[in-house]
Length: 194
Ligand code: VGL
Image 1 (cartoon, helix red, strand yellow):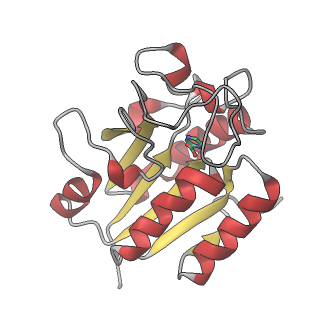
Image 2 (spheres, rainbow, N blue to C red; image 1 turned 60 degrees about the vertical axis):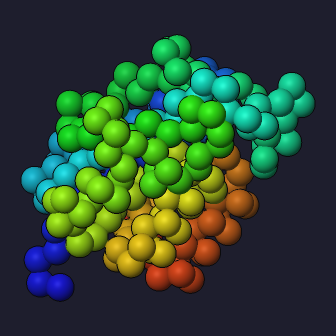
């Protein structure tokens, strides 16, 4: 494709997933800043910039007192709390739509949510005739992975920015990146390596 119409999807860069939050991944806060810097530099290259948020009310079976950090988690991103807000370093003025997900059940993929007008991510992408998706955010091994898999299954050429993701587990994040790549995702750096 000569000039693909690209969307940037920023996955779950929320306080609870950053340092000080109830389910913090290491590097979350620095990531929020880096994503802002990237949007500042590259927003012109995107037809759409979208963000997703975990927005739990009573997500059946997703929380546990003794979580295993695979299928169950400490309570996080409760709707209406500070923990569910975007990290303050993330400049949300760039976002054309915000996709909320996970109200009553776990929803790792951004494709499971909808915006405040009830539009799904697919509706939004189709309406704007998006050809390709770039992905960044938290967590590499969960929501980024599932969102990327969904995008690939829908047939979107999908890029994941290695320097704009952060994961729960280092090993699982490396495995996730390998899995995305083996399914056809393009894994690359957003910024030149210094
Ligand atoms: C996530 C674990 C639990 C994520 C959400 O955003 O990747 N991870 N809930």
